Every structure is written in C-alpha cells, then in structure tokens.
Amino acid sequence: MLKFLIEKEFKQIFRNPYLLRLIIVMPFMVLLVLPLAANFEVKNINLSIIDNNHSPYSERLIHKISSSGYFKITDVSSSYEKALYSIEQDVADIILEIPSQFEQELVKEKSSNLLISANSVNGTKGGLGSVYLAGIVSDFSNEIREEWIQSSNRITTPSFTIVQQYRYNPHLEYPIYMVPALVVMLLTQICGFLPALNIVAEKEKGTIEQMNVTPVKKFTLILSKLIPYWVIGFAVLTICFGVAFLFYGLFPLGNLSTIYLFASIYVLAISGLGLVVSNYANTIQQAMFMMFFFVMTMIFLSGLYTPVNSMPDWAQFISRFSPLKYFIQVMRLVYLKGSSLTELLPKFFALIGFAIFFNAWAVLSYRKSK
Amino acid sequence: MKVISVNNLTKTFGTFTAVDNISFEVTKGEIFGFLGANGAGKTTAIRMLCGLSKPTSGTGMVAGFNIETESEKVKASIGYMSQKFSLYEDLKVWENIRLYAGIYGVPEKNISAKIDQHLQTLGFEKERETLVKALPLGWKQKLSFSIAIVHDPKIVFLDEPTGGVDPVTRRQFWELIYQAANRGITIFVTTHYMDEAEYCDRVSIMVDGKIEALDSPKNLKNKYSSKNMDEVFQRLARKASRDAD
Figure (tube, chains in turn cyan, blue):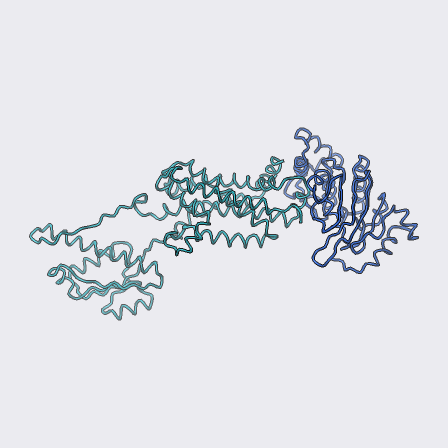
C-alpha cells in the first residue's frame, strides 16, 4: 500500500515544475545571498575626528585608523560641539577626540587619554565600532612602545600584550559561521512547510476524503507524506554541501555521514511538526500562518542569528524546545570543529525525542472520520 | 441477504439534526436510490455509512460490519464516489486506477490487467496517458465510478454521481451502473434526476432528515397516484420545512 502512495507523491512532485525549481534554486539563493545580507560584521563606520593636537603622532594615529578599512573619516571638526552636530546630521557615527597635549603627554608621561563617543541608536554598530576603534588605538600604543624599546635607552615598564587566537574560525569569517546554520533553516523551510501544505491542499481539493474512505491506515498515510520529503531533504542537503564547498570552500572538518545521520532525524522531526499543523488547519491560509508562527519563533530562538547564551534565562529555556537549535549547533560543531558523533550524542537523542513526539502527535491527531 | 441495515441512525451538529432517526435495509445486488432535496441529509447519511462520519446515535451494519466499531473493515468492502470530484487531477488516467487498485490491495501482478480492463469498459483506451484534469466532467465521473469499483467491492456508494453531466453521458453512466449491478455489486445512489430514480429497484425519499417513503418506483407511483417519480418527489419534498443549504 505504502509503495503506491509514495509512487503517487513523487509523480505529483515531479509534475509540479515550480516546486521542483524551488527545491533546487532555494539552496543557492539562501546560501549565496543571506550570509552577505545577514552579516553582523560592522564596516564603513563614519568617523568624526577632532584633532586638537596636530602633531606627527596624532597624524599617524589618524592614518592608522583610516587605513584599517573599518572607518571612513567623514568629518573633521574643530570642537566637540561641532562633532556632535555631525552625529545629529547622521554624517558621523563615532567621535574621536585627540587632546591638545596628546604628543607631549605621550612622550613625557607615557600615557594619554583619548575620547571615543559613539552614537548607539544602532547598538551593534555603536558598540562594535567603539571596540574596533579602541583596538586600533591600543595597537597604536603598542607600536609606539615597541619603537621606544627598540631605540633602547628608554626602558619603560614591562608590558603585556594579549595574543588572541580564534580557534576553529581563525579569521572570524562570517560565512563560515552562518552557512552551516543556514542549511538548517533551509531544511526547515522545505521539509517543514511542504508536507503540511501538501496535506492541507488535499483537504481543500477533497482528495483526502477519497483516501479516508479507503482502508489505508493513518500511519501508512502519514508515512507516505513523510518519506518523499525526507528524500527531498537529503537532496537539498547534498546541494547545500556542494554550494558551501564551491562558493565558500567550506567542507566539514568532521564526518559528512554524521551530518546526514542528524539530518535524517531532523527532517523527520520538522516534517512531523508540519503534519501536526496540517491536522489542525483546514485551509492553506491557516496552515501557512501557523507554520510561519512556529518556524519564525524557532528560528529566532535557535541561535541562528544571535547566540543562545546571550539570551535572557527564560528565552534560553524556551530555546530548548526548538529542534533547530540542536541541529544548528551540530552543523557548526561538525563543520568548524570536527566534532564526532559520540560528542554529539545528547543532541542526537534530543532530536530523536522531537521526531518521535511530533510524529506520534501527527498520527494520533489525524482523523479519518469526524 | 441484507448488505446494509440501518437502525434509528441519527446525526446532529449542535442543535441541528441532519439525519433524524432513519432505519432501512438494502438487499444484495439491489440498485437503491437515495433521494431527497438539497440539505435533506443524504450526504450526511452516506458519510456515516462509509465510516467518514460517526453517528450520534443508532446503529448501522454495512457489508456485515458495524459502521461505528469496525469502520476500517467497512471501508475495505465498499467503494465511494463523493459529490465532489476527488481523483488526483495531476495524475494520468491509468495512474489513478493503479493507485486505488494498489491501495485496496489488488495484487501487483493483476493491476495492469485491471487498468486495461477498466479503460476498455470505459472506452478510454486513448485517454490512458491523459492527465485527469484534462478530461471533460462527464468522463471524470465515469472514471471516478470505475475507480470506486476497482476492487470489486460488495457495495458502492454514489453521491450525486451525475450532477452536471450531459444526458448522453448520463445514459452511459447508468449502463456502467447496470454492468456493476449484474456483477453482484450493490449500488447505493443519490440523484436529483427523477428519470434516474425510475432505473432503481427501490428508492427512499428523504425529507428534513427523515425517510418519508421507501418502496419500488412502481409502488410509489401507485401509492401517490402519480404518473412518474417526479410527481412523487414533488408531493413529498414540498412538505420540507428546512431550507436547502
């Protein structure tokens, strides 16, 4: 029985040119466009500089800042008030004020104070911008210190520098972090929405009633809706691996089969959610609305865009119920860190739990009669 | 031998009683006409007999199985053709036949013979590869009927199978019904065409959820001293107080 139903599903999918194109085009769109758009790296910060010193040292500092690539010097003001005005006019995001005694203090007292003042309407830009700027300034002071040490006779107090090593993503490249997670979002969209919409479309057309009057078992019918999207999930995943490798040179450090294993469970879980929704929705409109609600919530709580650890406690608690969270962590760990299955077992069981929960609910809530 | 026996079957939706305490029996091989105005409760009754809807009270046996407790066994022994066309429009003619033959457990090796046989009965040999959505309405209905009996059920329920179908195709449709009846399949059919009611062995007329009359067309005409079934129907259905929905 199941064989005939699955055969039917595949015939219908292959006869629907839009669906097929979408399944193939979506991985490219999502993986090529989104990492660029959803990028939290801050660039092109407009900087207003008040140089009260006009010394070789202050010139050097300004040159260093402008050559960093993060800042654009859009305004040079003579006073703090004027610089503030440029912020109000949205010409500048950050003000750097160099005191009039900058060089003298630096040489005599070996320290000086700079003022960094940031517009934080856009918190990320303001926060990260001032951190970048402070970093450049501290680099600058190290440079000078080294020069003084090399010119030997000026022995200063010993200084420590922190050498930062970014493990697993040494250059802090955003796509490397985002691409594995976006694959999960894509699988969620394709394998969560499609089965739900498929069943509700059958309800709207009335074809499901013809099925309900046959001796097909509920479980068989649900399986016939799950399996095709399970196969499609694998196809999409494989396309994603290809795109990630071709365009980002990304290949998982860990085992590819680990990802497939997790995906096989994850797709069941998320399709199961779609099937549950389809049992309660009578029209495509209702189903779409419900799916958007659940999927959006789960994406934002999953740590795809913002780390779960920096969420408030209650949100962290809710995020435990987002199956995306587990699979996104797995994808990032396997891709970037090369984690093995044994290290990931707790997440594996969590996903199995979700798969059983949603699919059992889907079978139990499916009604062949009213 | 009774293939359908219904006792005091009732279905209510909230305060509305769609089917009101009906009882009747249908004999094997019979063509049973189930008449009634729109909204009289025919479809609700059929849906209960097919196990698509649970009765509020009363009992029914179809093909020897209880419609409430053994609805899955009922489903294996019946065919159903709904009021609304419900084959897969994006599948070809032969693919629809194959699907339902497979679902009803026709052995794989017999399926292709089954497909050929049905296409031949329908005169659809040329339409084998046509997508169902491209067929005209009358043809779709004939195909639906053919698929409803693909597994040689004991009973087939036809809910307004000829609605909107032209007279020639309607005639062909009834020829298909007779062929099936001759093979021993009991036919349970609803219709609004009174000429079709004349073709039935027995008819029941439902008014406001109740069965007002049940007999052979000939006896009914005598009883209500009418020339034809249309007059019988007019006399009974005029009593209806319920609005059509």
